[in-house]
Each structure stands twice: as C-alpha cells, then as structure tokens.
Length: 308
Image 1 (tube, helix red, strand yellow):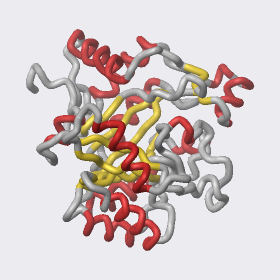
Image 2 (cartoon, helix red, strand yellow; image 1 turned 90 degrees about the vertical axis):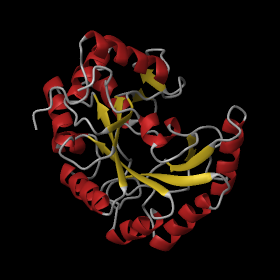
Image 3 (cartoon, helix red, strand yellow; image 1 turned 30 degrees about the vertical axis):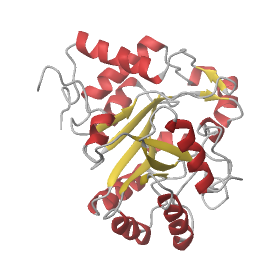
Image 4 (cartoon, helix red, strand yellow; image 1 turned 180 degrees about the horizontal axis):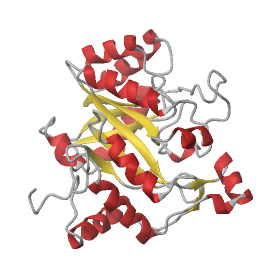
C-alpha cells in the first residue's frame, strides 16, 4: 500500500465521473417514512429529528425546482461554473408510488446544471420496479442510492426503532449493486448498547457488502427526540464520545474497512439550537484533518487490519 494512501476520499471519487466541480443540493420533496405513518411504526427512529438535515432553502412548501434554484444561487456565488446533484435527503425518498417518484426525480433532473441524483432511503423501501427504473436512468445520469444502515446489529436496530433488520440491508444493497447502481450507506457510531468491539465488527461486516460509498457519523442527542428522553432517564445506557476517543475509534474503524469503499464523511453537524451533546465545536473539515493527522502518526490506512 502506498505510503500516501490513508483512505478513499469522496472528492477524487466524484472526479472520476465529472470533469467539473459538483455540489449536492439537499431537497425536502415531501416524503414521509413507513416508520412514522404507521405502516411499520409510529414516531420514527428514536434519534431522529429531520430538522437537523435541512438547510434554510429546503422547505416542503417550495417545489423541487425552486429548492434547487435557491440552492444553486447559494453555491454559484463562489463557483459560477458549478454543476449540481439533487440530493433527496429528508425522510424516505423511495417511499411512494412509482409514477409519483419518477415525476419528482425527473423534475429535479430537468433543472439546468443538475447532472445527477443522490437518493437517501431505507433498505426496506426499495422495490425491484424502482430499481429497474433507476437502472435505466443511470444510463443517462449519475445516480447514487444511499441507504440508512445505521447498525449491523439487529438488537440495536430494534432498540432504536428502525423497523427493519440487517438482512433487509444486505438484500437491498445487493439488489441495487447488481443493477450497476452506485450504492452508498450511512452508519451511526455510538448507538446505545454497542461496544467498541461491536463497532469494529460492524466495519468488517460492511466490508462484505458491495457498497461504493459510506458516511460515518457520531451519535448525537437531539432535542425533541425519544432518545433524548431515554438519555435523561438512563444516562448510564449511553456512551457519548469525547473528541479524542471518537477520533481513535474512527481511525480503527477505517482500518477494518475494505480499501475500495469511498468514505464521504466522519461526523455530522446538527444545529446548535437542537444539539444536546456532544458539541465539539469543529467543522467537518477540521475533524477530517485531525483524523488524517492521527492516521499518519499511527501509520494507519484503510483496510490495514481487515481480516476478510
């Protein structure tokens, strides 16, 4: 392994597909979630407050086109030649009738300078009919499907009220990748009941899946969530990372990941008015720099400790 290789970064990955700068614009397309509307459960995941995801321009009363145009105005001030990926982020963006979904995706792709889609969803909300459609769309546009995996442990998934199992994740990821679609995942480190050993095992398990990209986030306690109430009642059930411990955990986690998985980010930043803990006061790029520094100090690199 090259001495300069630390991990697979997201920006060079995008350069393989685009000869120009691209930026994701988050959308709230008015979707709900089967874990909220009663078909799988009510109240949603215990940690979830979707307000933490959405920028100011991202409001359901605005059309998809208007959200994208306002997002473009925000970014174009600095990079006038920028192109964009429509990021269907809020709630479950494959949860609906196929024709309704197609209209929303195609509206986004009709906006000038939008060159592809990133679709955030749950692993139990991806029918084959939609995958077939996305496979065709992928012949003309960049398409990345991003699954909320959160954990590979079914006990954890039940505790946080996800409403699906890890087998659902395995099935959805494999069916997506088999169609040649870029397949992403999202996990949360520090969920209640998960030990350090379980987290490292998680990295090894994820490495068995045909995922292209991975987002890693720390657990955050957010106001207005069931998990925040659970923490107030039983704080001993939780391990909220301090900064240095989380850096060490991320470095070890990376070393147990398959080297070709593209790592998009390591932390989440929730609005201060919603965040209870942990509050490290760091921007995403500042945390990334600390991870890279720690990796160099330890001569660590992605996949170094993978036992597959």
